[in-house]
Length: 410
Image (cartoon, rainbow, N blue to C red):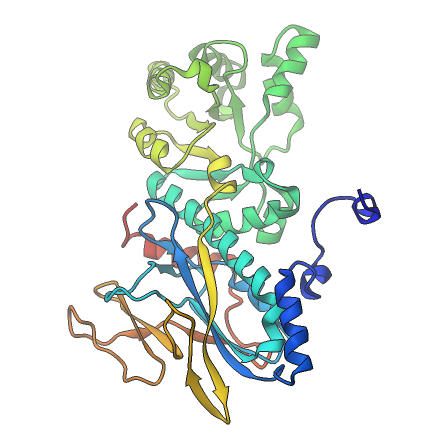
């Protein structure tokens, strides 16, 4: 292997390497050289971003990653128009046209090397936020805890936490992710804690008492109950030992021992209730997704710990295409085959929840269903490299998504 491979501590790009184009596809760098050599580097273009497709069985997606795009383009001589971060969108509008989610206007040379990372930002962030939103939709008012840091490259663990949280997760386990979000990280205890106490002291339940003794008192006492004994027996023993300090129990039963997981949960809940312990919360984890959560919600589980389903969420595939070029101070609509030429705007009827794509200089459309006024969704968020809008707090974006989830189905 080459020396560069040996020099790197970990195999990920720094922020500076992303900004200098090191993570772009090489043909963009070669194209930039050609444009400069031939005097076309200052040609103004309108480049639009549209979903190529949504993941299988998805009816909608969450637009996310705008923050990263704005940070990347900051200082460049470009304008950016975009959906608000956290906007729910579908692949096509009411008439079947592909929906533009963002567009960049400026000299092509200013952002050509950024097409690759921009598409990556949008695809990954939108995928994580959408999966988290789907899971929260399935969970309803039950808590969703994102445990996905271990299921992807550690360099992007904070990214997963950030977009999982705005998408709908109520808490995250990743320390750095929680720090960026301005919240406290949430977690329970690993099986390894009980294994160490069992091996050395012969009693794994002493691990629960040690957790209660050592960990800060403001951390909820949630005991993992499936390491060695039957889940019900461990749950009752945990309640006996910790008494009213026990906030909840977590079931992470391995798939090979689950049988009917819902029935296991029912038995645990019933026997706790029979002893007057129905205030003990039930947390479940291990291989959960929106479909299994929807079923387990019927058992009145109180919280779901989700790892792989969020961290390995399917990407939302976007494409960037030039749709207009400025020639002699006049915009010329032009696009490759299969793409729509011209500069566009996207309108939504808030009452009927439908979208319509129009040319940017067209009259504002009326809703084809109710005849009402429609709202333009692509707003200007950057002007000549200055961020003028679009950097919103995680809570604002999270609440925007939460409000929209009431209007969609899985």
